[in-house]
Length: 182
Image (cartoon, rainbow, N blue to C red; front, side, top):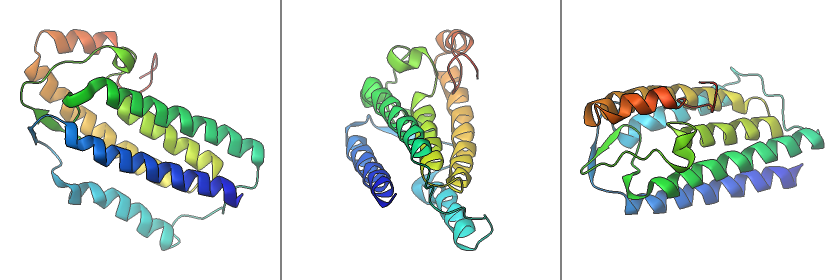
């Protein structure tokens, strides 16, 4: 199972390096709501502290290869969906809760199924990681999910203000995070 763990570790590292490099191409703007990388890191640090302090029972790495396979598929689908959404939104992408100068409302590609496909994809990839490696990773997924829901709520208020005619219609036509469900 070390090979499976290595695939996830390397895959997540490559994903985040890509994500950071892609950030250099975004439009100028400003961040609203939960500001700064320091505050975002609180969720990651809190999850790490909980896991390290033993507050969450560590079930250890999974030794179930079929379950690892299912997790790997979920992880790949999630990261692919997030990357597709990131590429599709192009320069309009920004850090959570940021507002761009000269924004455009993107409603095509993965945005025709959910309003926040990047969040959806990263969460699905996180669930895949938990399924494949250890259910304790769900602590991280839940904390990130709380942050993403907060971010999406702030972003939706901003988008409703920025696009008062188009965004409410788009909200009614698409789900927030899970296609056809929510």
